Length: 399
Ligand code: FEO
Image (cartoon, rainbow, N blue to C red):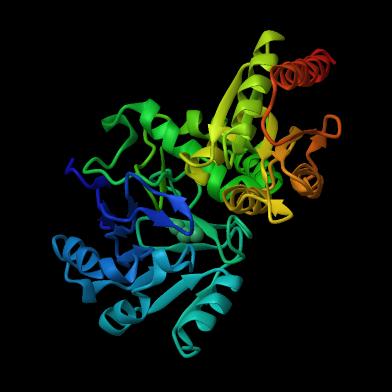
């Protein structure tokens, strides 16, 4: 089998983006790939395309197998521009007989590219289209993670083209999960889930149940980013089940920013108190951590303890940015508490509490505020506060 071949007549023809380091505020330190797939059958079919900047790579990869103008069908599983940016040029070139998409996909394509005379073939969940020897079956996955999203299942080969689901932002020369260390792929899958899909967890639970009921023979799961799952399909499905149930470990994150180290000293003492009562506590200084790495840690943490100095009657901007980001991703089943040093007005703790209430985080107590620089006594108070938080976490853990 050739390097980019999934099965006889089915090829990866996407593009690797080695350079991208920011994806809507998500730090993609390892780049990504925009996966597209070519099915050579009686009807030659291209499943998804790539970001506009990478169109030449897509066309080069296709041309190693067939002349791109021979493509009959274009399947658009998802309209976000990292998978559709070059669609107008591709359609001009290949003039497909059908552009296959979901009902919301047609609307989104028209809204993006303003061409309502393209040959749309709108499919719903359960619709099947024959390619000759093979059959494509479609599964709408509305809001996972856009209204237009859908999966394409190639029945005879047992390949699920899963669009963004089960992906990783990971640039690599390898195409399959058994060619890279599994721990690295799972780590990037977890980060991807935490930063893109977490807010849709209830829908993902439903989707996993309906896929299980369909009893699909999943020989491969081919997402639109990262490597293709051909050995560890069950592991990534189990991981999605765990993440979407918002299961967490007995662990606290003490996430803070500090002006003159007073809030930082409080953070350290609170963490000592948590640890003293058996709750592992990780200190996260927002001056040195990227919001998307912190969000990945939030996925698995039971408690989120937030600290900020008061600045101009508010909270420090790195904390504000992180909390706005976290709010959108809707973390579930978390405990929270707030702390911070202040000079005269001291609003930060109240603001942190109110932001956590907005996120439906269960607050433990009213928070801890200290004026200016902590004394030995106030550091002891912070340790006691950490112990109090740990006892509440332990109590919930035992229930
Ligand atoms: Fe990879 Fe929702 O785009």
